[in-house]
Length: 230
Ligand code: URA
Image 1: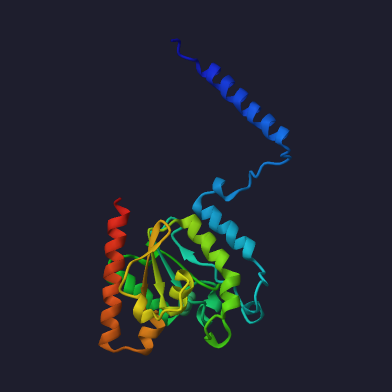
Image 2 (image 1 turned 135 degrees about the vertical axis):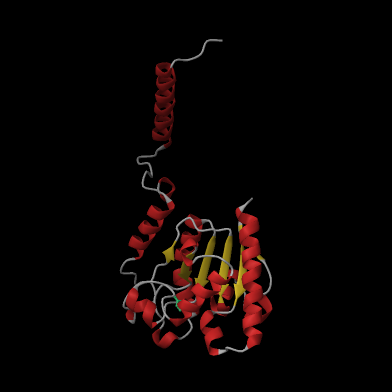
């Protein structure tokens, strides 16, 4: 058996490419989707998604928002934190979890040795609900494909869902956060671990909720360490 030279290998590869293109032409294809996200790095794909959201008017939250808060953090994060929706500080700055709840989230992650910038942080809706009310079903539905697209690009190993709105939206359930937390929920190739929203913990500073949140964080960290080394 003779070994092909680089020139012969290139000739063969180009011949095969030509045959594939002719085959596609004969099938009726007139264009190839060369701009697909699969050709982009995670950072580029997220930037493309953010650009595609610019000026979004798919739901009524567009009327009161200042900024679309797409998400921020490590595009290759193994941990993604999902909150409910931007508040006033986030709406003003265009970044998720930058207010008091965000400061607590940073501390919560640090308490299990996860620097905030190692994670990616986003929300179920990308625009601030007026007066910080809960996002409504039609608003969650309008934004869901964008969160799904973010997760498809990042492919995290662990999702930490913050509070009942994010947890119920992601798991497609109406069950209370008190019942959903404390467990590892399968979520595609990842796992989802619900915990209390940091804003809820700020409003309810008693030791009971704090202890449960600490248990959730330890669970998330255990899954994070275990699944990262796989
Ligand atoms: N609360 C949220 O749910 N998300 C933010 O980004 C900030 C506060």
